[in-house]
Amino acid sequence: MADTVREIERKYEADSTTRLPDLAGIDRVATVVEQGVEDLDALYYDTPDQRLTAAGITLRRRTGGRDAGWHLKLPAGPGEREEIRAPLSDVPPPELTSLVRARVLDRDLVPVVRLRTRRTVRELRDAAGAPLAEVAVDEVWAWPAGEAEKPGAAGVAGRTEARWREIEVELTGGGERDPGLLDEAERALAAVGVHPASAASKLARALEETGLRPARPEDRTAAVASGKGGAATRRKNFGEKESGKKGSGRKGSGKKGAGRRGTAGDLVLEYVREQLRVVVELDPAVRRDVPDSVHRMRVATRRLRSAFRSYTKVLDRGVTAPVGGELKWLAAELGVERDREVLTDRLVSAVADVPRTLRLGPVDARLRIWSERHRAESRDRVLATLDGDRYLALLKTLHALLEDPPLRPGAGRPAPEIAARAVLKDYRRLARRVRTALDAPAGQDRDVALHRARKAAKRTRYAAEAARPALGRPAKKFAKRVKRVQQLLGDHQDSVVARGALRELATQAQQAGEGGFTFGLLYGREEARAADRERELPRVWKKASRRKYRAALRP
Image 1 (cartoon, rainbow, N blue to C red):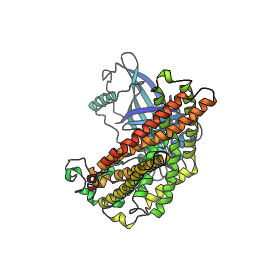
Image 2 (image 1 turned 60 degrees about the vertical axis):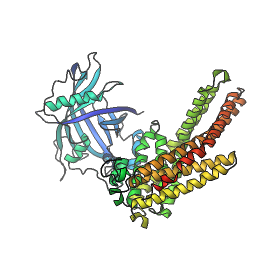
Image 3 (image 1 turned 30 degrees about the horizontal axis):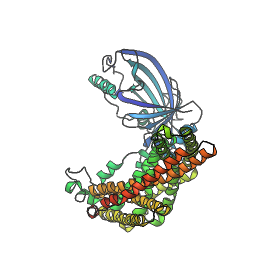
Image 4 (image 1 turned 90 degrees about the vertical axis):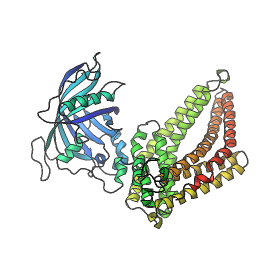
């Protein structure tokens, strides 16, 4: 069974002359307690082309010290990593390797470099004797895996043993770990000439100093593996800055200025890279059942598919359509878990709003049993999907598409021109579906039409969000207006789904002799809620469909 800890630490350069300052008295530190010396022996694993290293991930097998075992470290923010631990074994344990499957794909994990560390530990404690942080002075030896059995042995040509000294300061307190303590410690270290380490980790320094070539992007898709880039990078690439700032065009619109220099191909491929990065980055979070991770991964999957469908002037539909079909499959598999989460939250909240005098029978228990059964089924389905060959093939296909994109002539056109056309095309599709829904007779026909309009609203919103680096604030505002339509239609669809679940719960309660009164009451409330959304739609749509919002998109 793997355990997880949040690692919050900072590293510093040191040499044989470095002496630690007295850290007693900084922040809440009352005493510094010697903890002795530890001898650590770690073997680091990666793919031959070092994909984990490129993503800032480390996988090691370490003996010695208080936490011997397998350690997988995943980035969790500036200066923070999630360290997932598993017991010692001869080969990398499946509970850890599964978490990096989306990174390594079908590549083998092999030993890359070996580190031996002599660690001298001091513990910083508060006035009550509670631990706040550890300060470790590390003497490190590193050499390529398999090329030497001990420090000091000669390496092969071009590769050498490396040796250095460094200092780590890591927060160790319980629930409340204050990064301010790290700031105070850094100032104290700086006062005696100790400066932050240039390498992000021991592994990064070992790879550099032993002559092993650090992992580097094979092409632009490496941003997917590294987790670098993102929306801010995309806006910078297209010259968009925050509204009102110099260089952002007229009032930050992005219509004048550097945004015009980007091509439609650049715009769309950057967006596809970003969404694929999100999918890969969220894979381990979904496997670990991190809250909201399934939803975010599903959204990224849908955004990818929408980009392929909206920007057909840029990417060849004949190539992207099959990929879009696989993305639809993945979104559906993730949707089983996500829809269960949303539905359960909705029903629990609805039951809580019912006065106790109207809760007849074991309503809470019946709902809990129903929810747990569906949760187990949906959770197993999600994990089976991520462990399957079809998912792996989809990731490989997306990487290959980015390496050799099926560009159409429109890819060379200015990004604002093509982006505006794509967004407006999707808007016209949305408008037709909204009119159809408003004209449909009440009941199932209208429910289906509203659901189709919701999907069209989502696609239009995603197209506008993808266009933002080229179109600037008008695209942002337009996406915001369409999102309101999508949310209203989404609440209506959630009510449709909730009524189906309530009917199922009422039937089960009746069969168990419990009575279904309360579930019937909730069913009626959901009907009323859906009717409210239907009445609100004309007003919300009228506001979102104002001509001025569309006119602002045109370059």
